[in-house]
Length: 258
Length: 258
Image (cartoon, rainbow over all chains, first blue to last red; front, side, top):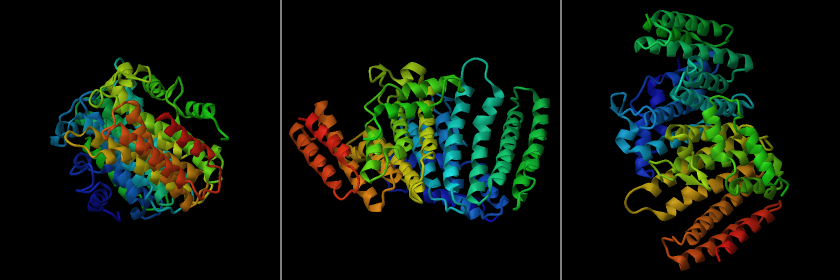
């Protein structure tokens, strides 16, 4: 792929508020939430989706940052005392544990807003692509909240609904935005949306396996990882660009679950 | 003005999730936050700004809804126990008091996302207008959080900074988005941004007067309402459309403060 993890980190650093931006507490909490964390899997899907439609990964750098900002805000709010009450995230204090509840709520709010502000800086390769990108971002940003509300609801929860929205929605957002930024047509965008839906489901079932916490049992979860991964790779068929990064991403996932 | 309050209410009803949309708790909390509340002053500024640049208020109906959704989410989060700890809003239980803290945080998050999704449904009257609208929305949506963080910070706060960002930013967002939706050029957009900045400041000083809670004293606050209102009306000079609604909005404000 034409861009690598250091490019993503540098772009995230460039869009986040700087030391000296006011208020200092907000800047610090937003950076704490985003920096030094995670595998940046969603930005990578976004960049690779632009290449898979025959475009340049560089054109998708702003949506790639936007999706990571969006993902980061959901983690900040999920960790809150009223939600999962997690004091640690990725081996360091969670945002609310470090900066207090109020600033954590507000830092999450600002990260979501900054995601949309960042998205508006995407260069347009196909007329109307940016508006479609915004529509998709808005829809999936609502979707991820729908998944979280269902997940924390008391009583019996609809597991497929939670998996689709809580996990796959942001994968789809990344892929659709990347495909649009890369100049993909409607058919290509739909191929990548389907890829990301299945990859997101595979990712979620694999997470259950790694945590030894599969609602459907280990055997069935491992089978679902294989089925969803195959479906993800099959969805890439017909793309004109280089989809090899996406294929290897999907394969790495299924290998990890073995 | 070509659209009235019932049009705004009907449009908000159309963009909010419907009974039957899942999860039901999220739909109910989002509607609780938006329905039956407020004077819809920001949507009215948005629609009137489209007319003030010579466009149609109908073209600005989606940004008008988006700004009200954004404003509503800020109120939902401001009321939370970790923030202002308000159990009542507009004579009924606040969202967290009615639905619990977790669902209130998430309903606020979903309202912000829905604001951006709604914005993407704006018809484009001038090439590039929608992307500019998104950039402005993102910037002011970050700005309103900056104002709130400064407002709740311990120690001495920067009152002008809080007033500009906590209040005027969403007024400017409404005016700029309406001007862009109405097909305004850069000069018109800037006129309306300045109008909204001064109107927002007048609004905030007037609020202090009505609450008998002006940090600068009653006399000085009343003087500021007059100065800012005059500056707001002066900024409208040179617009090609009908700015009479905006003028009367500003005048009503200064009259109320007497």
